Amino acid sequence: MYPSRFKYESPKTIEAAVALLDAGKGDAKILAGGQSLVPMLKLRFAFPDQIVDINNIPGLDYHRFDADGSLHIGALCRHEDLEHSAEIAERQPTIAAAAPLVADPIVRTRGTFVGSVCHADPQGDWAATMIALGGHLVVQGPKGKRTIDMKDFVLGPYANALNYNEIAIEAVIPAPKGVARGGYLKLERRVGDFATASVAVALDMDGNRVLRAGIALAGVGGKTIDANEEASALVGHDLTESIIDTVAAAVAAKAEPRTDHRGSSDYKRQIVKTFVKRILVAQIAEKVA
Image (cartoon, rainbow, N blue to C red):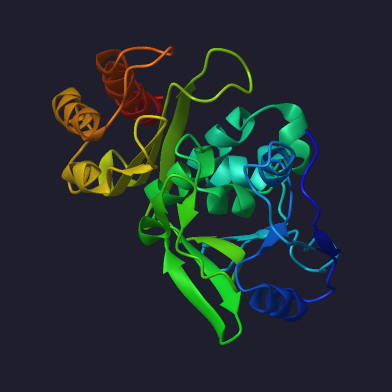
């Protein structure tokens, strides 16, 4: 199937892109990596009057750590940029663990971190990672810039908190309070398939003591599931098998899976519980090592 007809614009500045969105009154869409938008256009699940391609706007293809340790990811940073970054591998283990599990190598070459977050796919990897890490988005519209906490950004399946005339220009991960630890696990039937269940865990630690904890889930509900409240039970404690079991059970109970061809709801909750335990227990082993 071919997409419906649309106008194509390729602005050279963020301000020009915002002006096009504003003029479009909700009938214009941003094109960054295109790995979500293009398939939707071809299937006519999306049929905007105008496509605003931001790939010719300079200065958006970065990821960097600021002096305070916070991570900034520009709107045109590709998945593979994070996957192959030695600095990410050393300083942000949750992102490093998720990066090679995003879709497939072809998608990771063109797709963007920020675009994936904005797509708000209930099975998307990066939204879960951002929620677990307590991140936020910097967005720009006709009235300037504002920030949106990731916990408030995903409103539902494929729905986010952006206004029609705003562009998400940067994702920000706050600096860890201690040593950043964590991981990401995903069950899929084959490479590139939608997730049966995914778990993102992000910890800030002092030795074996947890200073901050975040957990989020994908693939087991109508939207990305924020389990940070359940994860907060770890804060102030050493990681032990007992507290890990308690938190894993609480997080699994937060999941809202549906029985389908990938498995029963009970099976998916068990996967969540197992993944949470596996990631947390690995942190104990890493500390001992």
